[in-house]
Length: 513
Length: 103
Image 1 (tube, each protein chain N blue to C red):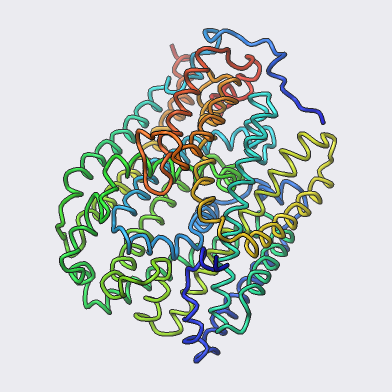
Image 2 (tube, each protein chain N blue to C red; image 1 turned 180 degrees about the vertical axis):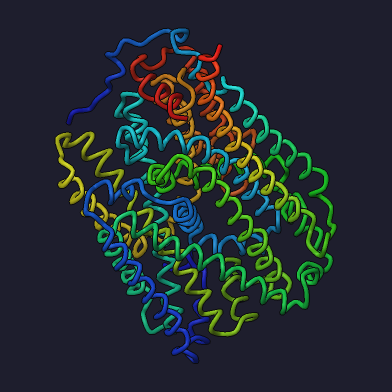
């Protein structure tokens, strides 16, 4: 398989067009690099070299920084290029799925996030495994969080390196070969994260999140100008307008049930339960910030997706040939409707999204492996200074593995990415038990997520009939609901945690909130 | 390798020994907020199944897009209400002991 096919969010032919006006493209890239270096310098100045500062920014992120770091982390190259491509293929119902998902995820961030923060602050929790492993008194449960982290983060790091590699190659007019571009992205991210920790990631993500939001807004404005008005964007679809702008979409698969249930589990997985999102719940400066974070996230995503992604995808449908690779729609359209400089900046925006996702995912993967596996299970007496060194070594190793995966096994990424997104969702049931439902038992926390994950794989491989198949990840809803029902059922058949543990968790939450 | 499964050796209580106030939706404020957000999702379902199937443009934009904006606004409003209720509850809890003293 072509090494770049699985992450082809920018068509390689664009490098030919860019090479004719290379100085402009390189200037756009150069300006971004300068801002990047300035942010690294400022973050490095504020960084106090402690483990707590490195992993959770000393629990000092304000609500705006926390919101934008979450937006930039979740968005990635997929959000900038893949989502407009999906709208191009199936229409607005795909975005309905994401927004309805955030209609549940935003309140969930407010409800669960505050509880996670209270516990994190009181007991010094840095990772998902800290919270769940301690509550359930089980290294098995702790190991689940490590497995989820490794599966989720490795896959996405590989995907982002592939995407970042091709964007950098295209932006430099082919001057930097694809393989070298990936190595450059990997080195830049590794140096930035290891030198600045969570603060550096959060500051960079704040800039990247704001840049992406503005660029998508500008893009939508130029599309409107090119189409001759807002209604024309939709009427230019002609007889296809009804299919692309209504439920259940072109393929007829996005029924209201699918939109709501699939949307809820997908966004909960990406924006609350994925380890990179989870760690951000500990990093806020106050439990009072969570309502603002939740409100900002749904507002920003609504602006980006409803007024940006939909317009890009649908206008691409009416102006680009139907044979075009959907993932390349946004970059092709950018050069068609915007001045060259802005179009080049849009590619820089995609690179920024890729970098924001890669830095967050490598950072959190190193934190979970070094803390929840090496310190908790292999070397329990590891002191904080050594843990920080181990953390950075694991991060460098993660990046090497990611590069290896991107160079030698790129074809595995797409199918893997579909399943691992669902694996993180299987941590929902133990999280509910640890912060909101004291009746939960350890037996339930061990059995239910394991069965949920197995069902996810079984449905993906179509080994047994699935009562509620969904697009892309057929078993996500069925496996997640089975997990939740099993969790409740097993908890009722077994005994809850010791009263002292319930007091430490639920008692503290009750007192503080 | 010190694999720990401490839960297997711990004294675990019966469910009825768990303090009631730690339950999922025991306090009224949480129940109202939960009810509100559930209601918004229920409304979203009804609107998706009815209005969302119509290929109508409102102010030049498909009605499905307006529907998504409306849902997002309702959620932001709900978050505002949730915080407002929480602050009211905290204030009344702060005031209560003074009232009791007066009695």
